Length: 66
Image (cartoon, rainbow, N blue to C red; front, side):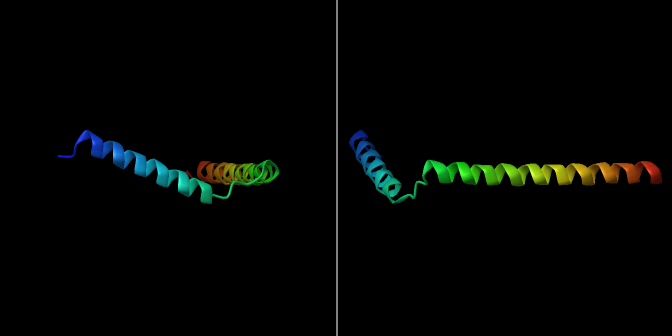
């Protein structure tokens, strides 16, 4: 069973490694983040409208057939 001091040492090592990895991360500028967010929202809206139309058409066809 590990002692409390070993847990503390492992925690410090983990946190220092997390900090080192976060320094390697590419953080996009605000303008780029907004642009990508706009693209994502547009694609989500497009897919939602498309699926809504497909669902409506299929519902009509099922109503006619059955």
